[in-house]
Image 1 (cartoon, rainbow, N blue to C red):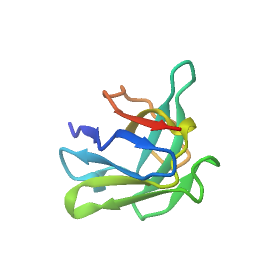
Image 2 (image 1 turned 90 degrees about the vertical axis):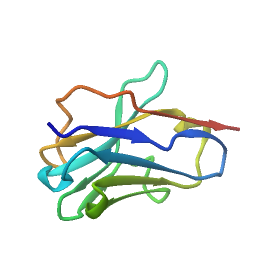
Image 3 (image 1 turned 45 degrees about the vertical axis):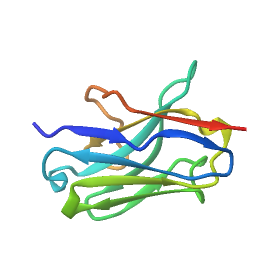
Image 4 (image 1 turned 30 degrees about the vertical axis):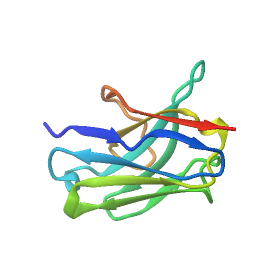
Length: 119
């Protein structure tokens, strides 16, 4: 079973950037799509960005223009480049494989990676 592991989080000042990585233990081309999700304390988990096998992507309104999702099939990794970070982006970020870019994950969540944006 291919597992996905998140990394790259940290503490950054508002306006700064971070790049998150979602590394697969096997071939990510087996997945129709992979998405990034986040959950802030007291909030429900929400979708941030998703990317399909063919490179099509979809973004939450809060991420459009600031975040970019990409994939490196050779490295079996999906990235989330986050620019112009805001304190409200503070959350634990997770990645999961999904059947399509319109799907919500149904698998179990990993540990995620913490992103903290200070004002």
